[in-house]
Length: 119
Length: 119
Image (spheres, rainbow over the protein chains, first blue to last red):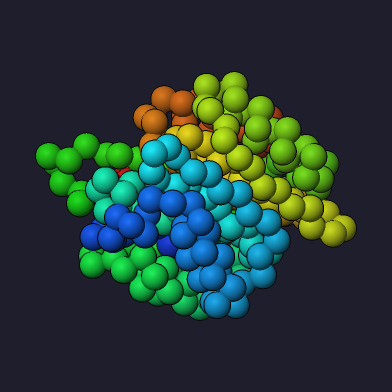
């Protein structure tokens, strides 16, 4: 339960990335490259993944980490990505993965919420 | 962006399920059965999935939906599941899937946050 004596056991970034070029959001291969690459480059250990291509465009997917997950759902028609980065391995890698995703999706404007999770 | 003229395009439940019997949290097969079954029974269309078994116990996984995703990470030693249900297909199915997960994980106490997401 959430209280001051109980440290957070998870750090979850909930982000809306706006202004992303639609050509980065249309195909699942690019989404996979961005998410897997950002997870790896942030130092996360990837244990599984699942992606899906919508027709004609749009993609969705999740990278399963030993320290929780990164998910993204794209709406190329709105230049928008709904991104979640949930780390039970500390905030630092989550923030790094977030920065990498923002950069690689070329988001011009984003909103992000930090949610602390408690077992 | 979030404003009163822009309806939410996603409904995200962030839940901490406490008091779950540890035997339901130890093995990935049970986790998969609960998540896939709850997604399906709530009326979601499952397009992919990815799960992982931690050794000796503990499991993690995500069900990718045509309407976003359901993820869960278990900590059997704390009788705890970190559950996310994110639906871009309305709140009703998300709430139904949540109720099914609570029941199937046999959670005795839970906390849940509703997060509205805006493209």
